[in-house]
Figure 1 (cartoon, rainbow, N blue to C red):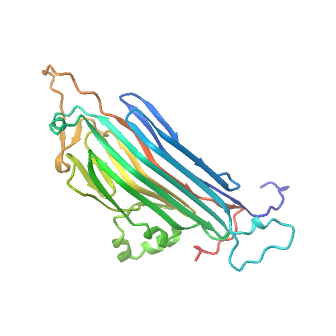
Figure 2 (figure 1 turned 135 degrees about the horizontal axis):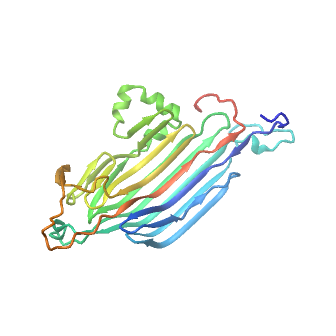
Length: 320
């Protein structure tokens, strides 16, 4: 440490961001959907807003995307303001909020499967009429950020015109508004079992979970599509992950839809019932080989926050 460094007052470093959508399509032709309606909160707080009207590129389109990130100080109930020359802001609690709304998201990928043409289709389509995500964190400047507000709305989700219902449960994450509280709650095996469908994976210091409690077809499933937890796998497209939330102490990031197009093994495809069968080219056939499948990845409606106090203050626990 620099011996000449002077003592500094505690200062809250705001950090919040929101993103409408973005993607990197790698094949058959490589291109990017650059970040749409991206809002990044200044380190000093304030507000960042962005909006994008109808647009898209290649197989991806959308009607609109709006985002907002806000950060500021709030007077603590019953608090006494400092009477010396130091800035009040150095001692006030801080609040950060992010919000994103995307409408009319569409992923439309041309297909060459003969079985699909039997149903009068030449492409496979995933459509989301309305996606809305919002989260809010508060810091008392002593304890880890508390995330007591979380919103996740999925409306008008369809696959090849078949409605998909996305049920959500955000209470698991607002009741356990810090990483420590969530870890303590999950240490009870009965509690862990009740929410096992929403806890996807765990590593030291990080939990990957989902706000989605259930995926189900409202009026029959489309051909060759399989639901596993919060993941939907569609032959000819790839995998779609709904409502993922990354949780670390003081940090959370919610992604409404993450997609991974193509397959790690292009010699296989998903058949009905989730059974994988080999697909081989008939070298004696006079028919031209079908085009390679679309590959790539992207996200739709994402927001996160992890502000902190600098220099770090003594922690009093988990904010309770």
